[in-house]
Structures are given as C-alpha cells and as structure tokens.
Amino acid sequence: MANIKSQKKRIITAEKARQRNKAVRSELKTYVKKVRVAAESGDKAAAQEAANAAARKLDKAASKGIIHKNQAAERKSGIQHLVNSME
Image (cartoon, rainbow, N blue to C red; front, side, top):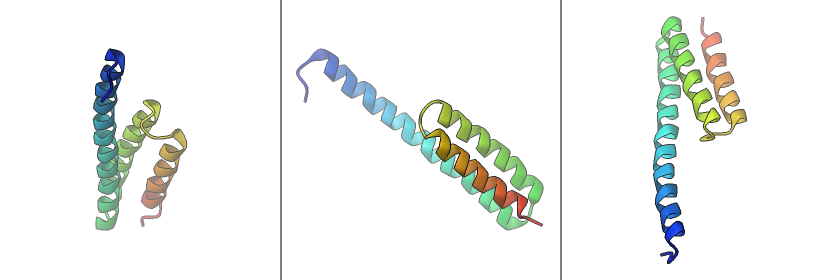
C-alpha cells in the first residue's frame, strides 16, 4: 500500500474507473449479443434496431476511451454485415 496521500487517492480513483469500464464493456457484449439473437430468429427489423442501438453504445464507449475507435468500427461493421446478410 502506498504511503503518499495522492497515490492512495489515485489507487481508489483507478479502481472506480476500472469497475466502470468493466461494466461498460460487459454492456457492449450484451448489445452485440442482442443483434446476434435477433439475426438468428430471422427478424431483420429487430436486428437492425438492435444494431443501431449497439452502434450507438460502441461509439460512446470509443469516445470515452473505454475501447479503441478502430475496435468500435470493426464491431459495428461486423454486426451491420450480419444484419445486411439476412434475407
């Protein structure tokens, strides 16, 4: 454990940020999973709505630095490709 007051504060702050980032990353996985589930059920409209919601969440996470912007772009591209490939 650190002896310096500012370092003790940084440890606490970093832990709060880690927990928050972990929650956001978990939420992202849930939104992407909703797109996959909707695609498997064959409902293109629901899949597109889920993809739009997931893209919004991915963009927000990327803007806050929780995930890299290129990773957000790759994931958005993947889920949109899944929706577009539906019949």
